[in-house]
Amino acid sequence: MKQIITIFVSSIFSVSGIFATEHPSANEIITLIKNHLNLEWSAGTVDTFKCGNPGDAVTGVVSCMFADMSVLQEAVAKRCNLIITHEPVFYNHADDTSFLKDDPVFQEKKAFIDEHRLIIWRFHDHWHRYQADGIYTGMLEKLGWTNRMIENDPHFVRVNKQKLEDLADYLYNIFLTDGIRVIGDPTMEVSKIGLALGATGAARHIQLLQGDIDVLIAGEAQEWETYQYVNDAVLEGHRKAVIFLGHINSEEAGMDYFSKWLKQLNPGVPVFFVPSTVPYWSPE
Image (cartoon, rainbow, N blue to C red):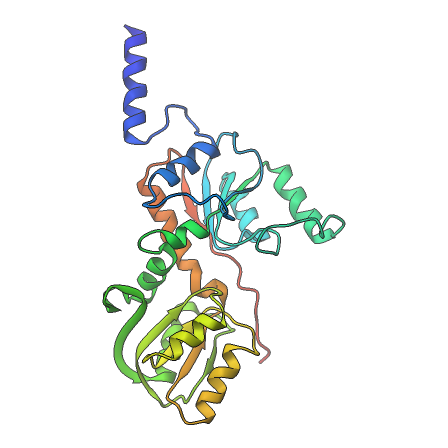
């Protein structure tokens, strides 16, 4: 009788998505995530394990934008050993550490990860490819613009007509951080907004600005590209503007949304969102 009950309970766990073991492995949790995405998994992707043993049991999950030291320390404090990060761990897109082997900053971070047996997995490409894009979905929710999309496209929203400076103030009051940059006439009235979150590149920025949007809200760009394009547009009298939020501000809400999405899958362990440190400050 005991054997029959055990088999029956295991069957329920398998169907409901809850793991039969007390603590599922990191591999099992990532497989759970992959199985609930509405897309094929790409072979050439940065969405891979960066540190730790994927076969280890997971005590808790932390979702974040950047796995910086403050996030890693908070994960340890919360007794979580699986960190799911949107962006690289080691300062370049591919997490290539060959040029960092003798670097004290890298060595200290890696030692902390190893000491606490942390497992780090990146979730970038496929979260953007998810329908609808998980980063944009989270950002629109944070901005209160989910119902403002134009033709259900998360890259375009229409808001009530307002001055550019009022829109910039609205964004500042949401993020409450230094580093937001604006190019454009502060008194210009804006309504149609284009979104290019993260680091989509100047070509995408300019493509959006060539359309009928009034203002582009972007993450970041090199100063000799989009910045100068919009600067020339303004100097020539075109009604264009751009607001740069910075990379963290423009995408982090999407990883907060991911933590809620993962909780709904019932991964069998606690799930937390931990914000990354925005390190910029301005002199008074």
